[in-house]
Length: 290
Image (cartoon, rainbow, N blue to C red; front, top):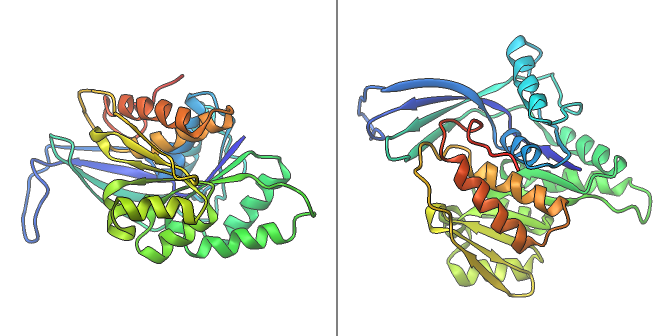
């Protein structure tokens, strides 16, 4: 059982000939609306590859949110722990013909209290894994500690997987790494916030975390707490839209961990799923089944 706590949103994808510079005006070639959100996408990817996936985000009470949750349920995701007390947010995705993207996202209403409630519920339900997106840190660390503090002595909690791509500063990323058992991050952000390869190797060892660094078509690297390094290639595909590929990778990685696979096996499986997800438009349409 994997509980995904994080973003749900509507993706408004706008096709553009090139990403605009400040002051530019460009003509949209397409405008398409679809379901998205880091955690919601990851939960759908996990469910499609056979996991018992639960989504515990925050949406609204209106029909559009009902349809959003129904789509997750159709993929096999349980949404019982999703709060309907907020707003289903919107992300604007600018997409060029060669797959380059720029994303403008809207903050949601998932706060520390929701994380604490979800972590408690996951522990009580015997969940194996809890997923959080990096946007929740550093505040999420205190929420997780609060949930663990009132657990009966000796009661194991779920392992923590963090998608670091929401982190916006070094402090947030370091706090997330300290809390996580497994973390997934895109290489450009990892290098920008932590440093080059030696710093990433030290991060895995210092924080006792399995760190998967993804790099698009250039493949991925798994760094272990023991200092091991494993590199793997991406699969070759004709990319239509890479939106949500990272979410697919993380969801499939979680699903394989939940099946008892090693981190290396999970990363190899996840890169195939993520590659396949790029062959159709939108964050969800290309998510493969097992």
